[in-house]
Amino acid sequence: MNLNFPPDEIKTLSPLVLAHIGDAYFHLYIRTRLLQVTHNITRLHDLSAEIVSAPAQAKIYSELEIFLSEEERNIFRRGRNAKSHAPRKATVAEYHASTGFEALLGELFLRKNFARLDEICGRAFEIAFKGITL
Image (cartoon, rainbow, N blue to C red; front, side, top):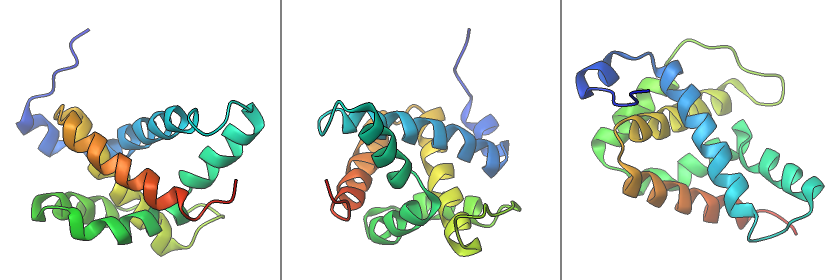
């Protein structure tokens, strides 16, 4: 299986496709990092669900934005502005912000920019975790 995507092809992908990949990556990243906190499966599930929720991701992005390049903010905006439907547990603004955040992660993943992806997800984890009660 060839998982190489030419940069020109990545530019043509829908921001919702990028968000789909970014969502999967962020879930796995958070679940893995939480193993440093607990091995209780119920607690792992509850914590990960809280961190990867649209409201949490919107908050994460608002604090992360200053650390991003202009190109990364443009990817976020493209994802945020994509036509989609908000779930019941988030406002429309939160859902769109989380979609933008996930689109950024998805693009970084497909471009194999793993160092930057790890840096952003690490900061995201720190931001999210400071609001969580253990």
